[in-house]
Image 1 (spheres, rainbow, N blue to C red):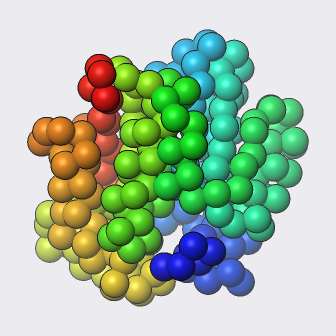
Image 2 (cartoon, rainbow, N blue to C red):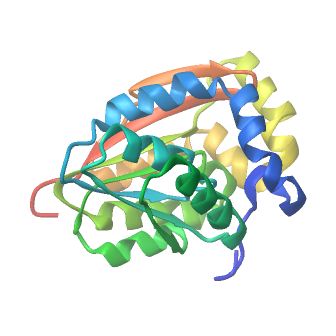
Length: 220
């Protein structure tokens, strides 16, 4: 991936406008987003960076749940940011939309309390998975939290098969297969300085979606 390249929502630009509908019906979205929101447990006054915010669904949920929090949403795609901004205006919530990659979260340099990404890292190259997660950890202060919901290790034959027939058919094998083989768990363990297991695994018609939480060590 070069500095300006990214995989659009649903793999192709012409599908972007259908992203919200596809995610809603294909991924048990209400279940995993509610679980992620509860895990984040955002509080008044906290700053959270939503990395790869896409069409802004999670960012809007966060701001609605905790109006006193500061929500900064980052994505490289200007088209999805425009969709997200329109959704936020319709919902009457104020979110800071910024164009940039996951790795650019490092620019916040410890000023955020929490960072989150959802359904992002399965569709980027392995080097971007690592630099993106490193950027999220760099964004939060010591003791801050990184939360991720994504397709990670697909343990069962059924989940691997569903993942292959849906997500991998859209996004290709090169970037998605490492996730199915456990790359996300390995990178989180490496950068988080210890073994990392999902806090929850949710089976869907497109494969299993795993939730992770990593707390940045004091002094990091």
